[in-house]
Each structure stands twice: as structure tokens, then as C-alpha cells.
Length: 155
Length: 136
Image (cartoon, rainbow over all chains, first blue to last red; front, side, top):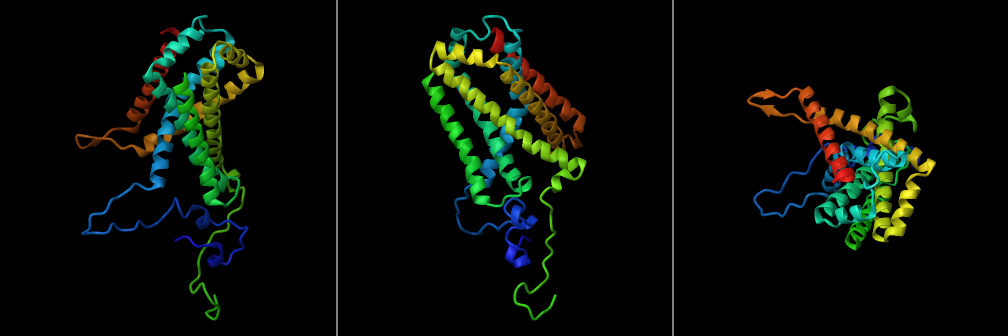
């Protein structure tokens, strides 16, 4: 099981596997209390993992075509003139279903990034600060989602 | 370990890991590339937010955004984002076929079939989005 650097006799600036991973690689799960009615809330870790997974699918299946249409095809002049006409796009985005779709398209990749970047901070950049990294990453995604909600309501 | 020392009372094995362990071998490097390229998914989200902000601020702002999309460095950035998200698509489908196990009538659906389903979903969704985006 994971140990703190002190227990392992290491110095504070040396990251150990256990130090970095003890939250996500837990080897044991606390047993449910039996015989009592207990309200089981899904843990925050489970919630952000679900958002990460959904974001993975959105990024894999929906994002490439959006980048190809907006970023490449439009700039290269391959689209008909009416494709990105202001009236047409405003009319399309006024539909509540389109708004929901756009909210998912903006928010879920952000949560996907947040979850991966959170661990990249530990694994690739070798920085500890687990609580700060998680708060900064998921906080950024939450702020992006809030901005998307505000702007979609204003269109 | 000497017993006379205070805690820990038992030896604890903690492997020492170099800070750049993820550059060492091919699979580690591909793993790191997968994690780091998720950055471009976030950049896409920011770009989409800017698009929606421009749309909400009226025709002039929207036309300004479309003009900005045609700047050479923005086209280059779009190409990099497209490459990164397609890399993500490949890795995501690969790991999905290793995670999802579908059993039908006592037999396991082969991973090739699941992969084909994912590619079909990608092509179908892309066609649908392109249709609404361009011609609808």
C-alpha cells in the first residue's frame, strides 16, 4: 500500500509511485456498512471519471469533424458560401437541441483534458501538489462549462 | 534494516522513479503523447467558446471570427488540433476495444467487430454533423 515519503525514508522532493498514485490506485475499498440504511453518494472521483470518459468519446467521435469543417474546410474555401452564413448559424443555434449539443461539445472535452492533465502534472512534470492540481484542472473545466451555459443562453 | 530504528517497523519497498521515465521506451512515450495531446481537445473547446461568444455578439463580431479563422497561423493550429484529436480517436478506440466485453448468447463479440462499430459511429456522426453544419 502507498506510503508517504517520510515513512519510506525518502526526501520530500522525491516523488514515489505511491505518493502520486495513492488516490487513483487504491488497493482496498472500504466495505459498506451493513444492516443500516445508508445514503450512498457516488464519490467525486467517480463523477469526474465519468465526465472524463464521456469527454473521451466526444473528443474521439465528434471533435474531428468540427475541426475539419471549421478549421480546415472553411479556411480553404471548400464550403459553399451559405454554410457559415450568420443567419443560418444563428437559426441553427437557436434550437434548444443544438444548444444542448454544443454544451456537451464544449464542456466534455474540457473535463477529458482536466482529468488527463491532472495526472500529467504528476507523471510527466513530476509535480506533487495533488489537491491543488485537481482543483485547478477540474476548476478550469467547470469555469469553461459555466461560460458555455452563459453564452448559449445569450444567443 | 536495523530493528533499533524507530518507524518504519518493517521495510517498505518504494521504487525510485526518474522524472523522465516516460521518455524511456516506445510504449511510455506513446502513453505520454496520449496524455499531453489531450491539451488540444481543451484548445478546441476554447476555440468553440470563442466562436459562440462571437455569434452572441452579433454579425460584425461573427464575421470578425470567420476572418480570424482564415489567418495562416490559425489554419496551422487547426491542422495540429486535427492531427492530435485523430491520434486521440485512434488511441481511444484501441483502449475501448480492450475494455468493453460484449457477450451475445454465451459467446464474446470479437474486438474487430467492436472496433468496426466504433469506426462506423465515427463516420456516421461525422456525416451527420457535416450535413447539419454545411447544408441543412
